[in-house]
Image (cartoon, rainbow, N blue to C red):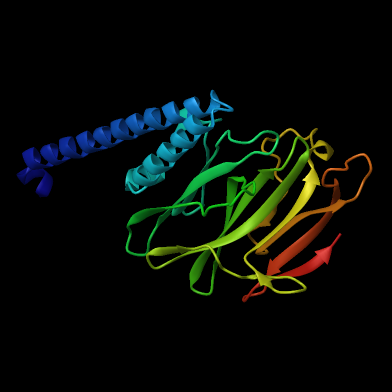
Length: 263
């Protein structure tokens, strides 16, 4: 009946909806070009400390502002591929942006922004904590686990410490109410409960692998477990060690991730 009685109103609503989507897409495209300008300036000005500090600061400020837009959480930003790492959780509620500040040499310094959808449906953003001179990495995959009435996110990052020495970490996050909690201690090691686990390795021991970035953390959703390779000392790979085909596995037992096997 509604279609017959009010065709004009329905057509008007459809036109407004299509226009709103088009405006949103256009605004996200403008944002993408704006961010790209800063990223290109950063990539072309190695060694110019003052300029880089200013550009990285501006990029972070704008990304923090843009990341509060609900549309940006869904937008793919394909024009930023290769310049800005963007990884999104399976449920689409948690995303991490990270980029090379170009302020390092063989040791790379990355900065970034977390974006997340709160319990009330508001999209919010949070800057990476200050690294105080350490080489923070870039993020490129997020695993997801629903447990104990909340969603747990496991974010995988790679840090570049030198030409060959590299590190990978897996860190746990959760959106609790209106805030992002980055101190979820659910990984039980031999000494304590931790919110992350990681290892160093020599990049040249995996340089022949095709994928980039090289993925050394794997997630098994059915078994609720993650694994990563055993790294051994090797004279051929002195800067971090050799990645082997043996693995260390942690499985979620309902309360925490516990180590279950080496093979």
